[in-house]
Length: 409
Image (cartoon, rainbow, N blue to C red):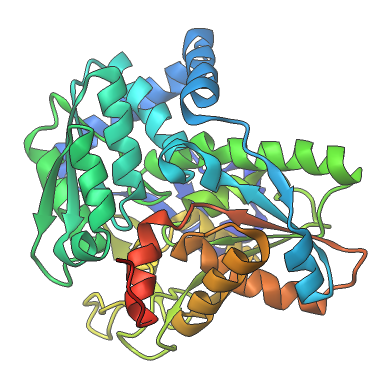
């Protein structure tokens, strides 16, 4: 049976397989020097999942430090504005540090301590994963180094200060586009050099196995809470769930518990940038090709010679050339649909939610809002739509003000 045929027949929630593959996607494509470290990480994670002490510590820290459970909020005025489906927002923006990223950072930090690793490295684009990593390292007394593209450091200066305030060393990356892809490259180089005492807290459902699986599992709490909360509020499952997709961690966390529920439509929203033109967007399913990048086989924006293309998004967290392999698999088998939102639409949605609900969303999350608003208008009033509000927009206010030609001081 071919890889593609296997992808069409495997049950979604049974994956990845023993080789870390989701059908033809995923796997382990790393330097030989990292193979042992990844194997050790996989073994440590498998043992931790079976250890009640780890499970309880994670539950306790998610509750007491991160602030779970987050609310499922009926956005009544946004619903009225759209005139269609009843809109709920999953309020990951209310978590400590301001986004869903803290779920994974806590889980991996606890795991790193179990493995005896005292030095943590991470990459970050929008800075939310960097802030979450800095926070957990401060909490657990771990040395912390964050890699961030120089362009992202400029547009997310507030988060750079927050990371440094919590004791992290933030290393700017001047190579290439100076954004997330280059930050990942530098983090991987660091890990190769310091693998014995260092754990890499990768921030999205990307990279070599076991990272996509592990990050997904730490974020599954989002979907579990959505299921419980919507049943309490409405007595039934939602008709549709929408989330933004960069690497795909918040989306896979929201979607996973509903993969075996065919009545629930699942939609991921990528960054359309300035439009679907080469170098002007980060929508991997709109022009991307199958390839390997930074440890994993997935859909990648690349030219005919296999060189990684330039990307663009108004949101630093979605400005990345590859998508998580599990998302590629679900798109391939037709279980999850994917759309894109362009920068101008995102800025409008950012302002609309702020005005109608008093909630300032992250620019990343605003991509999901764009498509959610469109879908709500198309759906019936007796249908239910959940939008995963993956982060809050404090970090983006100054950038948006500049783009709108307004002053913040």
